[in-house]
Amino acid sequence: MFSRGGVIQLLVKRIYDWVKAVTSLSRVIHGRRLVHLDLLMRFFCISTDQRRYTASLVAMGNGSSNQLGIPPGKGPEAVGCTDVMMDHTAQGSFFRLYYPCQEPEGAEKPDWIPCREYFNGLADFMKINRTLSERILNYLYGSFKIPACLDAPFKQSGKYPVVIFSHGLGAFRTLYSAICIELASQGFIVASVEHRDKSASATYYFHQKSQLEQAASKQSSPGPESLVKEWLYYTPVQQEDNEFSVRNKQVNQRADECILALEKLTQLNSGSPLQNVLQTKFDMSALENSMDLCRIAIVGHSFGGATVVKALSKEERFKCGIALDAWMFPLEDETFPRVKQPLFFINSEKFQWAGNISRMRKLDSPVAQRKMITIRGTVHQSFPDFTFLTGHWIGKLMKLKGEIDPEVAIDLSNQATLAFLQRHLRLDRNFDQWDPLIDGQDENLIKGTNITVLQSAM
Image (tube, rainbow, N blue to C red; front, side, top):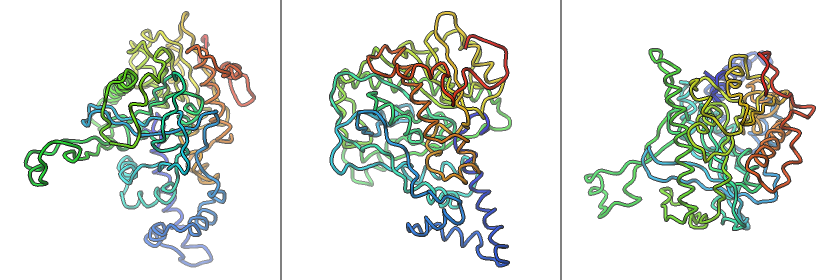
């Protein structure tokens, strides 16, 4: 399913295969059995800096691993982030909020992977032993931080436009931080939704303790202590299921979750005293009257790109959309004529195929602008953060990196996005300096697509 939109699936599979390959290879190096899989896994449990560097240099071909990291925002604003959960149930809204902040001295940077359950979710996603996969993934990615200030004070400076972001299949709310941080650094409030349609590798909500459980814990009244965390992991399409029906139901739920996140932001902007179930240190009341709700856009990658199209068809408050390497399969044809807003497709060179592009072109409109560009040398994983956190050799092996420098690729995508947002949200910024990118005017861009299909206006 990865070839149709999963962000993580190939990663876990290739790492798993790589470990087995390294184990096999190690048995013949210098004619000796140097390492067995169980010893390799014990080694991964020992995560000193020296061993991390040595392993990456010798075994992984990751000699620049000490230079890996998610790029910070390039805009004028310092960026804060916090997690927001409104309503503790599975029907509530859960997103990571990125925003312009007042940067405090010694600010805490959040972990890129929030906790071990997300590693377990990736393992379940590929039906691979949790212990094995958790150790590998934690070793490779467990120490990375997001370059944003956790729960930093919100910067009051007029009203900011709003972006809702939708992740891809097998991903979750933190895996596109490079994109979200860049938008926030340029003066946007960004809500990166964590979807609960069972397309995320993992997510969670809470259920209320029963009266018996509360009595056993000597609680006199319901409160945060009465909530129990429930994990929801990725559910694959079963052989007897109709895949389109499953994915179509999911894309509708995803769009509704994006609209719900917008509703919650709208309520916060109006000063409604909403409670964050997660009880972070962030002052939610600071968001009152901080958002320009006439300037709202939606952005998403892969399955999230399809979510962009579906959300535009359902909610007119989204003034435009940007679909990053969209996977169009989940969308029914009836959706396309309902999309009246401007829409921008930013594609990778290696992921797309004629049938998918043809479905994008069903959105052609004589009245609403449709644009498409393709970034040369990119792969489907050139948009999530993994591309910045994996060394050159391993990145190529796992197809997390294309031929183009990852930062050049994400800069082109982000700058074209900002130019499109300025044009269609009518922003008074300098993002129009990147207008030529919208039309593919750069040596690393293709106007339209590299795939041979019937001609259209895009």
